[in-house]
Length: 264
Ligand code: NAD
Image 1 (cartoon, protein in one colour):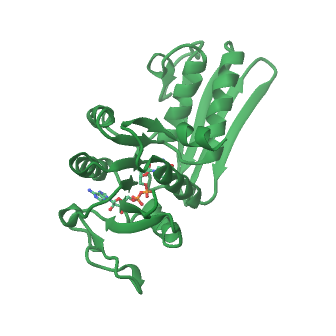
Image 2 (cartoon, rainbow, N blue to C red):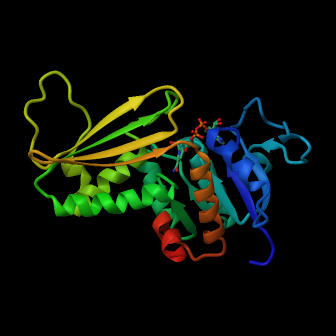
Image 3 (cartoon, protein in one colour):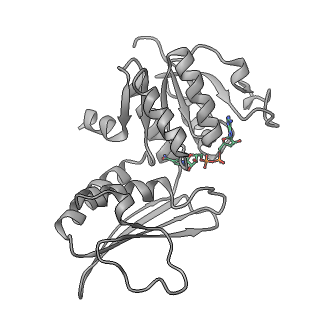
């Protein structure tokens, strides 16, 4: 594309939205045409960058033409962003997690008609961790496997989308589905560990940006594969890379691995 990509950020006043606003301002690949906040938000009409910019926070009722929408909002915000993309032929890049099966289904159907890229985690390090875990789980089929994740106390869904994506990769490495193997809670007297299960443990508190650790536990030895995000700009940078990559692309359900594959 020769002209800048016309970009909308959905969830623009949230933690990820603000990280995106900070980065996109000096990125010549993009022309930020709209910063969408929730309907009724106290930020509506306020300047997105303080008083030096003409861009104001708005909701979808003021929608303008765009090439790509980046969404980090919540299930409702994603639902609205998806409706906009379907009606206007824009591509969607979303990192929102904690979706209902119905919304998952809608995203899948939308990808048959327009480009949709989803990632539970936009960091390059987590993409590599996912590959490593898939390989380790396959190489050590008899070892116990648990995934521990930690996030700030305001996170609404659990386990995190990233922990679930890691669980899917580990299960795939063992030729199974996560639905068959997952254990999401242990309480009271759950009994001895069932061989082959994948357990999840969740920590919430403070300002933790996002930490994931996969423990592969054998007899007399253990492998710990982990990733620690200390700055959420890594997710914002990854989402912008994905937005630049998806602009003008064919319809399809794309992933962050497609973006990385195009770079290596
Ligand atoms: P946040 O709560 O700080 O921000 C979400 C924002 O979306 C809020 O400002 C909220 O007002 C807004 N919102 C809610 N409903 C909306 C609507 N209908 N329309 C427009 N905006 C709406 O949360 P966050 O930490 O920025 O995370 C947002 C989402 O992104 C969560 O689902 C989180 O799990 C996910 N996340 C994903 C990644 C990744 O790499 N994939 C990284 C961080 C966070």
